[in-house]
Image (cartoon, rainbow, N blue to C red):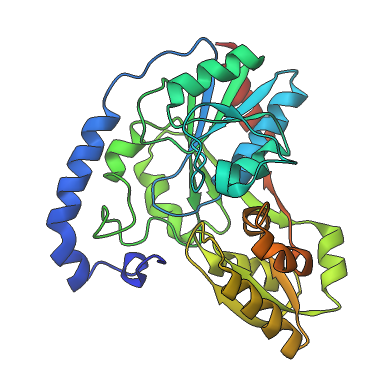
Length: 330
């Protein structure tokens, strides 16, 4: 199921009717966030976001890990493995593990640095330290107070912001914005910041960084000669479609699925046949492609689908590095 459209429009009748439920949900979330977390024996950097769905957390976590490695640290990713079945701490093998076991995000992260999947973040951080981590980069978990954080960065999709500003189910917020801002040490706005300006104002003196997702140049060059059938099952498929078009790649058809969508054999066959019928090249995200791994029913789709990798570039990279390393050393 995809996000309700009314989440991303000014608050109206539907959000008003659901606001009592949002207040109750927000009160519980705020109470949980106010707890003191367990202190790990190493620095924990958290990359989170204020809303349900995608904002760019995984590319941000990858960027931070690369920054830490350049500084001589040994970063390990820590993730819950959403969409997978692992419950106990597990070190991900990017070559042999399937997304159905460890989750799609874990497979992407494991290509950059060692990645631990654990439902219990405190246990997962201890597991990472025992394996040799000098610092943990946590993908998601801003609203989870179980583990004390040396630095918490909230990622905002500048194209969507925080939608109608209401708490789930009246809107996309995971908890009241003010309560979440109290848990943040910095904001990172990805893309045009028009929809994020109100949040930046409310953030007060918090450092604000600005980034953009940059498609891989070689992949763009190879794809510009083709018309594509773009498909994505991520938090905001339209963001992927916009990235494709901005790169100069012509979209002949598009298919949007829910976040972390697990493709069925029927959907895979339909995508392959639709592309063949219209003479289009199948194109998807790295996360969607990772989700196909280990599933024989999706083998043909995985072979046919091209991927458009993206990396996060931050305008104030030096200032971000100084903030990160200052917290790590402290």
